[in-house]
Image (tube, rainbow over all chains, first blue to last red; front, top):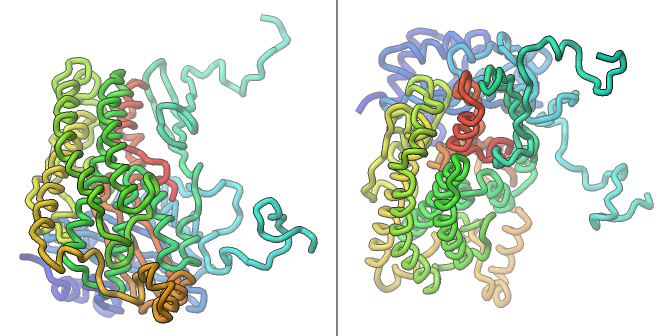
Length: 172
Length: 408
């Protein structure tokens, strides 16, 4: 039985030194961070290395932490080594004002739509993406709806006439 | 030609040698709301651009304002051909976050439900593939059994399509004797119908001509495109979440993971068919295992987690404790532990993942659904490029694209 989380961590620190940080194992899955301009190098290393072989991109999405100044957006990659059946989670954080992260489409074809979805909802600008446009929302939308500054629904809003749906009158 | 143009054509459309064809958003062949803009040279597809999002319902945003139980009905609407897998997958994710262990009997009951859901999904996919290649009768044979499966759901949770089945920790009630009866009936009758269905299709000359070599994908490309589930296995990779990361005691069952070789439509059809047989065998094994529980154990249908499992209605009306818990659970007034968890189950279409970040509040801080459909649909262009339009329709059908899962 192959790879342990410890081995992966050692391999990564051996290659990238101090730059890969925040190793943790929430619920058994090795999680770590890297600076955003290193994301492709880390992904490539994980892909190419003979023992690591993380060649399956399970999932890619973003998380918004509005209170974490300078690193508001996290892009999270879930990678899977299908040979040893190990999963890892890899994060890069970016400033929300310059949300430029290199695209992983060259490495994984599956990243294409996942990155488009992430752009669509969080506005992460994937540099080098072949077709970075909105995918699920309408093209005319001019904001990124999954960011935390858009509350889901304000129960006290008065601009919407919901009389027909039994949610108070339009008198105010 | 007169100077007066009756039809306004876009610039350059006469000179252009190809036709732009819209397949969808509401086309009978798409079986759902999504669009393919195809550039056609005669009957050949030169390129195809997919447009999705027509039924996007912002589930991930909705989930950020909802307590756990209000998210279960959202998951129903992902792959609505096999909602119980989504529901149970979601509950398993919550259990992983909350550290809840379920009793073996609950696991086996869940396995029965999930495998029934898998059968109901695959039978739709394969029989609709038959319809799309021009054979309607197989569909009629199998559809009857989806009805039977839905009746079993109905007996267990009260609803049929969007099931909202189960609770965190197990089920809301034990399987009734009627449910077991219906299950026995299904186990007895379905193999015959499935055999008949296979006789109609598997060695059918027309069906083989239409599907062999149609939309093939290599194992390498399929992995690169993030394929999972039957579509990946048809390409020859034996990746199955049930085997690789067993959940809900799948490790107790013996079953074969079928794989194809070329990843074409015919292989996808065969893999789904074999999976239906394997699911039947798993259900039978689970049924036998459940028969072995005796006495008190035979009545267990949920774990003991009063903070998350709704108390019985009778108790809610008679005891204060139960009433308080009922209220708290319904209103979502329970704080979850902090954590970050990824959990996946083998959905009918592939790895259905839930990435759940809790910041210790009452609702998820972030919830992301890994929808297998969404991820493998992007390979569609590569699969159909250069093929005939009628083949493209068959490929689309064999991928089992479910609009609800595409758009979340």
